[in-house]
Image (cartoon, rainbow, N blue to C red):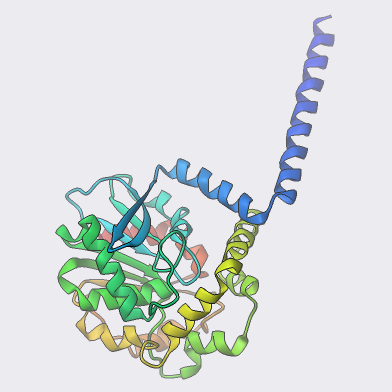
Length: 312
């Protein structure tokens, strides 16, 4: 009798498990991609213990999330790349010390930060906006560590050059805005020439395009389609002749200890990029260059966060 009851219980558990699995699969495939992406991001925010906040400067709203409180060690302001938002860093911050004060910002026009098509999104102008944000939240009460990837790296470097007293350390991940001996290494030029569809462009950043990561990517793309005019405007402003090499043109004014990292398998840049880039880098007082796998793999790599923690 007991064995029979146990079998019945196991069958019930199996049926419930099967129904749950089928429900999840159905929801995963039938819900709008953007909605699934938002649910996954909401879950990650809860898991990482971050708080989303808003601050305004003369009617312009900035959105950001933070974790921790300012302490003895410098805070870290982290900037994302073109067409992404602050949530792209949720996988990275789990490797950073829990007592480190982190601020991840939606860049101008991105995410929930105000988007105005009449504004300029050239690197220097975005750096000015970031400075307004920094002053609004009082982050520059003491020097902080500044991190940026791609477009965010370009703007972080320009910021460090324009406001050197505010930056204690600088980390640039595959930054745009540098001049190379071979102009074919210019990422703006490569993107213009390839004319890749948005879905394919951002897939290049996934070293392991798992089902989960691809679903998140599809959600991002679904949201981006609604901002197509802004993304075109932002790209054109960044890549115009006056802005295209902003990082290179400003790097002699960077005084903070600086690390620059590229992905070994980054498909937007050739494999010999770090070597050729070092030929044109005369950046800051301390420079460390590490070759790792693709950009998104690097963003989740514990070794990178160790380097970041050491520099902070």
